[in-house]
Image (cartoon, rainbow, N blue to C red; front, side, top):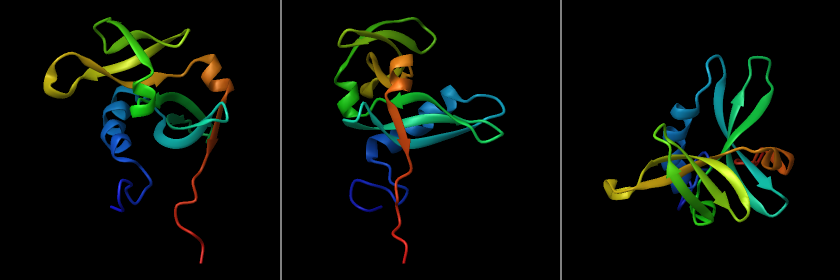
Length: 131
């Protein structure tokens, strides 16, 4: 552990959310991964991806890190762990889980939308400098 980031480059919130989201969004026959991305050239995000057997990577959701979570206006939980929500004028689906302390719900991840897919640039972070 190096400060707020682990050796694999995840912030504390991302390390907390990743196992919860990974298991809930797991797709049979595909590997699940977490990548860094830039959304609309302005905001760095952590993206849950599905990796197909032939190697294609498909974004599935954005982790609801503090900066994203504060923008989400949750609607009613539909009982299966998904909630309709809004970010600004955009309607989104959000994977939710119990809030800290067990009262209410909190956003865990924003499921990708066509707009997110179009404006998302995945990249691999150079974690260890080459010597």
